[in-house]
Length: 423
Image (cartoon, rainbow, N blue to C red; front, side, top):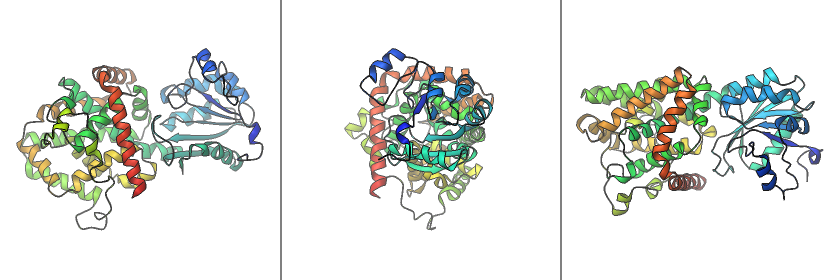
């Protein structure tokens, strides 16, 4: 049964590259790949796609959306619907408004997960920017095949929420990778990074560096809402690290506990009693560290990245739980381990003690602090090329381990999602 009247004659066109779109310039290869799919036709360029389609989806990186829409937008079919699935909507919507004919409706979307995550039950943001109710209903009907959870936002709301839930999370993992690279270490090969929280750090850091650089650069640099978050994360990291270096234990404890109370609530409060995000012991099962298989005990760690994350949220007045309906699996996993650290009796105090008294992780913390400031500077100066170069050199360093890490990361996220369904 057709999802709406006339759906049999409703053509959906994709323009762009990228893993989420599957369309690129390899025309002959794609023709061969989809030769047995009667409902899929490969066209040579975006002009032909724009003329033939009732609903056109631009699947290109945010940095290129303006150029691509300028090229193909004027060829858009009369009365068609156009949208994009970039992770940053500000440049996308501006491009549509500038280059699309006025008779074209605009309905954008964004799946809040990576290309290798099962879309079923995951958030799918729908943005009715300039469209009739009829056009919007058609887009919903088309995208319903993903079995995602539809979330309705404006472009500005989307960018603010993705900045709150993704920008700082990505900055943390990007900075971890740079720190380990700077110290020429593969953290899964030693005895220092063992255990649940360390598993998350290592696997998700590798997962991010295994992806394309422009995904994270676009979200951070082109999203105006992300700049203050990334800048504050670098500031929080630096200031907390200084407190540790200078041995100012009382001040460190006061600041971290104030941030904890603001983000997670005070002990014995109704908010504190909420069920934890992560099923008990779920992340302990997923380790790349060979020492974990020999039951090597985890070393106490100050977890500077987690302390800085909560300090950042506190400083900006961000309550991460407010955005759970729009959160990515990666964000929920990272928030879950952060919550575990801050709400487990004795664990937070142990981190603070290590931060003041123990130099085991001092070199890594120094490089992490430098890296966080470096990413923040790239964002502030809107330096795409510098970002690409910083990313690429560290990506190459970790590249030999990507295949196994991505598989472990996928399994970890799947286990977390299944735990959420059971709760």
